[in-house]
Image 1 (spheres, protein in one colour):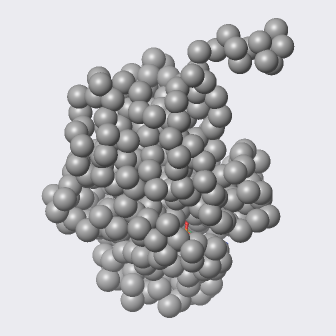
Image 2 (cartoon, helix red, strand yellow):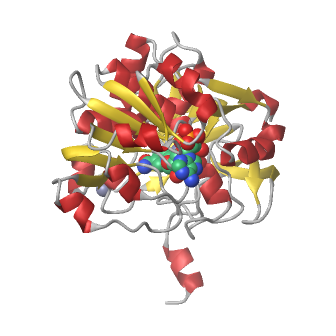
Length: 363
Ligand code: NAP
Ligand code: ZN
Ligand code: ZN
């Protein structure tokens, strides 16, 4: 069958469209700029959301630059979305017009595989549909993210957002929040644990807040000396500057758990040696290049090295509810959309306190 015949056979492209506005990257080497496009009109199970704030994740920058070789252009980044419902499909039961909602990294999954059935949609075996630069399941084309004025999404991938917290500080919870909450919960981190958060950026600062809230003794491992006071204000008990040999020596074999949020290439072995016997280092940061991990560092102290991807939809709602109940939000720098390229330059230099969030009213 030719490609054209396949398209005719698929009943996917028939939904009507509506205009939308965004900031997009047109190519890997280019800056983001204004771009008009079309989104689908809400189907029976869809919710339409006017986007109020969108966080800026380092993954957005990885995708804009095509670091992982999977970007599709024009690319509208953004998966830390909060907004207000403006329209719902006929069969929508969970939301109504006017509701405050959030959308994170997932907008669809197969819903049938073992992982989807166990609320682990992020690990969908049928292929999760990510919020941007992912092939659409129900229509031709690929997804466009939250650096835009509106988004249309199946109700099963939409989260309830409390009106008690400032929305700009809630937006980063949709990715940075759940990505750090989920592994800390999975590894049952709490009182009596010595936890290190590696990298004090968007993910790292949320990791500090959650680990401290769960009762752990928290140490920040950082390359940036000037972040020490902030680390302690955010809830860390100790701070280790990783270029300081004495400070590094003092934490050898000392942590039960390390959460590695580093976005760039780094020496895993250097940090693994800070784990106690049977301790675990969980990677959430996604450097472009593979790392070398000597089996000796793991084997001789029975150490664990693991990974973790965002969190499922139910766990994301649990995290948002936990944050609303415990007054936990992100520390943000709110920016105009026209300043997004400057924000990327600063993020790349580890210079953000501690998440940029775009005020979408400036689009
Ligand atoms: P970010 O705000 O830029 O923070 C990264 C931090 O890593 C920096 O602030 C810096 O902290 C540290 N760092 C940077 N370069 C380093 C180096 N060469 N060596 C050691 N430390 C370094 O980024 P983010 O938004 O938190 O994202 C972090 C990573 O997680 C990215 O790779 C992103 O794609 C990934 N991510 C993964 C998931 C998931 O589900 N697994 C979800 C979201 C994001 P210091 O100044 O304290 O050293
Ligand atoms: Zn993210
Ligand atoms: Zn699935």
